Length: 91
Image (tube, rainbow, N blue to C red; front, side, top):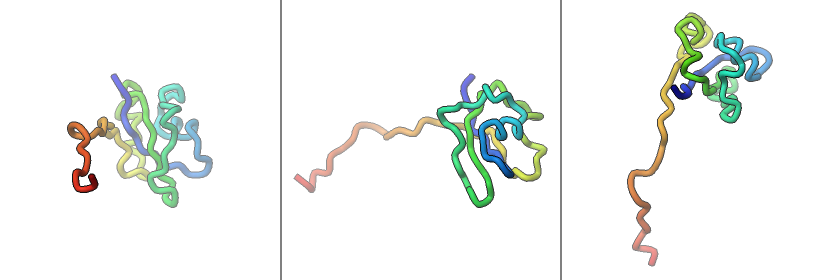
């Protein structure tokens, strides 16, 4: 199993520890390299990557009315379609 993208609304301290607590997962289940990414800093909404095996319905924040769309969301690889083509008009 891989990682899934989750969102969390944090009041007060913004940290991976608080995000783990809010989602109901262990801190070690969060991808530190990805970290917390601000989706809407004014609304205190952040994204983070969590091990898919750690997310259950009870830990996903689904009952948390302060976070309308907690996830999990897929995280597909984004890559170009085929080889790069040089603009021939600039030669």
